[in-house]
Image (cartoon, rainbow, N blue to C red; front, side):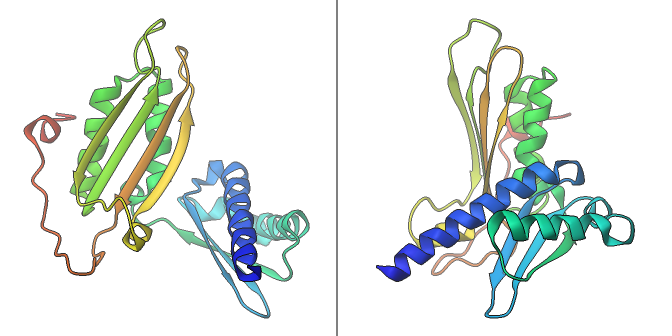
Length: 209
């Protein structure tokens, strides 16, 4: 019971750190965070599109961020490192954020989702799913859900841990929209299953042309 409670507490802290960093590092293109605790230090690796914004001149920004996280989350000896995102179209949070911003600019939801899942798959993903829920049409329309799914995405079991996922919210003029993106990274190995390359449906292959 003590172990389970500690696991839950650590998970809550990790979620809190992730939300805090997303808010503080949005301009740096925050994507995700990895946390590794040791008896001596807590390593916090932050993935962003613009590492320079996190580090700051002479390391001032990252030093302040480290100090704030030590106080806010009561972390002893945190060490923050910054890694640059290699491919934005394989990062669920960045894909979801791009969709959110595009919807707020008035882009057509169906065309946008088709275009984005095409880009994700063309960048080597083994599977991808984009779900948008809310006011997807003009003012006065009912809320509905739009889901596009390609490739292999496990729904249950331990293998779901191999799927990267992110959720963000978009706020167009006609109402809020929740966006969820799930991606299976290139090279992911699933037990007892070989993943074949997915051929894009014509409707999606033609998206953005």
